[in-house]
Amino acid sequence: MREKLSRAIVLMLLIVLTSVNGHAYDDGDFQIWNTDSEEFKINDNSKAVLEQEFRWADNANEFCYHHYEAGFFYSLKRYLNVGLGYRHIYELNRGKFKLEKEPFLTAALSWDLNGFRIEDRSRMEYRYFDYQVDSWRYRNKLGVKFPWKFTSMEIQPYLSDEIFVGFGATNQFNRNRFSSGVGMSISKNIKGELYYMLQDSKSAGKWTDINILGTKIKIAF
Image (cartoon, rainbow, N blue to C red; front, top):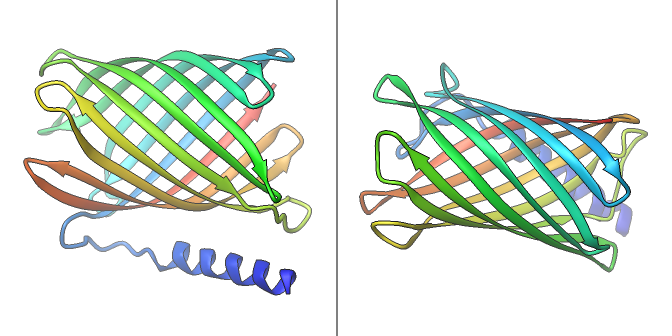
């Protein structure tokens, strides 16, 4: 029974991933995101992480975003991890790439429940702009890794949902990201992810959708 359930979950995930096509939806479009990170172990409780991300929008035909991030993370307890860092963002806005500078603090709780790995991460960001009013933003991401792994690459399905709350001229919940994907071990020091994300964002009182096919690569040193 467990084996049949595992196969059914993986099959549904693959259907979702392959069903995303390259046409624009009524209130959004299809995008491709790629994230690469390098993780450097300092000691048993701490690590430094470098990250870069690139995005293509307008049915994946237009390069629209890239960011570069550096962070330091420390495990206070087996179940509690804290960190701080800085993200340097360039986002296409009216035909030009605009800069956002974003220092952040983060804390994550993680635990196991009947074989499922659960993580609840909170992140507070200060968003500094040259072209608009600065603001604060709170993010909370709840993720669940399933207890099943497949093949020698240890392919493991997961689900996550992340909310965004902005603080500035108006304080409001203005974004949600739901993700469904698989993680895998490409080699001893290289991990990978393939995922589908549905992002809902609110702007000028209107909610719009974006459908995203994403990849992640992490190299640990």
